[in-house]
Amino acid sequence: MSDSQLSDMGAASAAPKFPTPKAAFKRRSKRLRVWFPYLLVAPAVAYLLMITLYPGIYAVVQSFYAVKFGPWNPIGFNNYIKLWGDYQFWGALWNTLIMGAISLTTQCVIALVLAFHAYRDPWVKGWRIVFLIPMLFMPSAVAFLYKLLFLDARVFADILIRLGLIDGNLAIQSSIWGSRALLILTDIWQWTPFLFIIFVAGLQSQDEEIEEAARLDGATWSKIFWNISLPLMRPVIAVALVIRGIDITTMFANVFIITKGGPAFGTETISYFIYRTGFKFFNFGYASAASVIMLIITIVLAQLVVKRAFRSGKE
Amino acid sequence: MAAVKRTKGANLFIRYLILGSWALFCIGPVLWFLSIGFRPRTEIINPQPIYLPTFSLDAWHMIWSDWPMAKYLRNSVAAIFGSVAIDLALAIPAAYSLARYKYRGRDDIGFYILSTRMMAPAIVAIPIFFLFRNMGLLDTIWALMLVYAAINLSIVTWIIRSYMMDIPKELEDAARTDGASDLRILWEIIIPAVLPGIITAAVIAMIFAINEFLFTLLIASTPDAYTMSVALANFTGGSDGLIYNAIALVAFLAFVPVFLVVIAIQKHLSRGLTMGAVKG
Image (cartoon, rainbow over all chains, first blue to last red; front, side, top):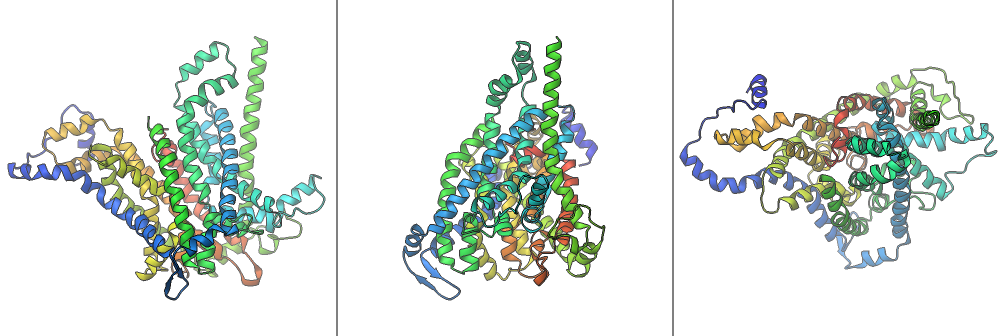
């Protein structure tokens, strides 16, 4: 069908004429009708099962074996028992949580402030493009940029020295919190725009008249923000934070490139722990046990948080 | 009246101070990175950072002659476009089913598709590594294509589904009373109507595919399957350490096309990034 015909159809004045199917086909199509929606969604589901269910089962099975490159030796729950007492595993969980929480909170506050100042600005489109830029670089590239700025070329330290704020060098690499701060800063720089874009869209879609009425009643902008904009934004914020939260807790490239999990495993995230155990020490069974724990946490969080956030976001 | 004007002026000042500082914070590192790409190697890592470097095209010549950059580019493009094609072929019918039919288990199926977006790549990395090894697909762009498609399928499906739910039902009903089959309705009415959504989904899938790091790192072990994202990590000159000017140039090489397509779909970006949950 040509484009012009389609646009005619969009006008909805005259419905297009389709040939009427034969009666025999109609009878068969009754049963087909019931199965049709399942058939449409089946290929996508099958594809995803291959990449989630199959690996999930594989990981569960492998977690009961000691697997190096040779044969699989069944060892029962030993991997899990060892995991329970492994301070590096608990450390990785803690690092993931603490860095994720700090990073997410900071990004959310910054993005809200920026969005609230930008959304009625005449140049909001311009701001949006400028703020977007960090997000459009590959994460691996951003990781190298920050490694260079803060560690290898010491530009940050040099600027602080020139400003007279410090005299010596900054020992970022050897300090756990210094390294964590660097990873958090990298994440904030690259991904605050993600929240900003969504928050601006959320604010712009709010009813301008409510705000106007409040303003005429003499409400200050901070009152409008706390009492009108923010409550209306709650579902939007929930969805945005859930998506960003997932991505922060699965952070890998930054850790791999900037800190390699150091110093003293202080910046090792759970993703990096699994990678190191599996692909550096080839301890596949043990890494799979850690994967299974992560998988369980993911499923629980998906049921509790994601489902709710997306349901409320739809309305 | 004068007081109102003054607070208005002060508010504007604060607004531009805040937005302006963040803009500087965004742009500063980018400009510095750009300057890295065009300076000679000797001026990158110095005891004293050099803020006014000499201009040089060293890195530009280096990425094309010392490394198979053309090959990395080709790998990236093939893997990305292949994966987006797989995604669209699977996601459009799935989204249509989720958006337009009522049937038992529909919401659970939809949520299952969404929830795969939550899976940390590291969780499935080991089994997928062995899966591809057994299939003999390690170190090929086919494996990358399949993985990228899997990562993005949930996003693509949910974005397109969201756009399909916006189409007025009457449009289909008219065609249906005329006896058009469901597939024909999908092809001739629904798909043209949600074209912006399909393009948005494709662009976002493309960006995530370019960014993908962990799987590519595990799957690609030689330049045969290196993409730009992982090639960066291999710009090392042995004892010379990381070759940052080459890294910076490749970063911008990947950035420019992404920037252009994102500007083109700007209006749909927030909806795409939230998988359709927030309408821009």
